[in-house]
Length: 287
Ligand SMILES: [Zn+2]
Ligand SMILES: [Zn+2]
Image: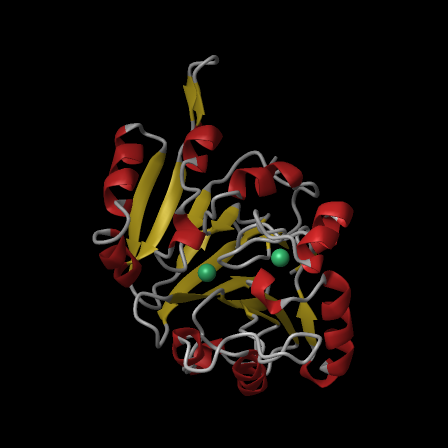
C-alpha cells in the first residue's frame, strides 16, 4: 500500500515551494534561517501533490524522492504533469528509484499521462521526450497521451486535463465519490477556467507573487518580467472569487515572498472570507 492511511482518498502536499525551495541553498535570510532551524512546516520542497486512493502523483520536482520518502509513499501507479518547466520535471529520475529493483530482479511500471499540448513541449524542451522514451525502453514507464477534457479512470478517481491561458499549461479536474478537486499548480496568469471547473470542493492553485515584504519593501523590481508574465497574489485572490470553491489551497510558495509558515497563518486570518488556506509540506486533505 502506498499511503499512511490505505483506502482513503487523501490529497497530500508533498512539496509546497516554487521554483526555489525553502530554505534556499546559499540564502542566509531570516526565513531560510528559520526554516533550517525549525524544519517541518517552515521548510518547503519543490512543488508536487499526490492522491492516495488513485495512486496519482502530480509533477516531479528535483527533491520529489525525499518528499515521497517523508510521506511514506513507496509506489506511484500514475503520474501527470502540469507543464514542462524544470521545477516541475527535473526530478523525473525518481521513476527509476520507484520502479527498478535490481537486487530482487523486479520492475514495476508507472503510467505517465501527458495532455497532448504538454507532450508537444516535452518533445522540444529539456530532452524530456527522449528521457521518457528511455524509461519506456527500460519498461518502468508507459506513456499515455490525453486529449483535452478526456476522462481517465485512475483507481476510484476520474481525471481530466484542460488547457490554460499560458501555453503548455494543464489544469486538472479530479473527481472522486461525488467530490471535485481542481488543480492549477502554476502559471495561472490570465486563466479563464471553463464551467466544468467552477465551484469545486477544493481548488489548489499557485500563490503568486507579493508586492511587498513584511517590512513594506517592494519585492520584485519595477519593470521586471515577472510582473508581466506571472500572477500576483491579488490575481490569485480574484481567481478564487471567480471559481468559488468550498476550500482554496494556495501552494507553489516562493522563498522570494519573504514569509514564513507563521506569516501565512496570519494571512489566512486576514483573507478568511476567501476560504483560503496556505499549503505546507505534509498537509493532507481528505477528499
Ligand atoms: Zn513552477
Ligand atoms: Zn532566504
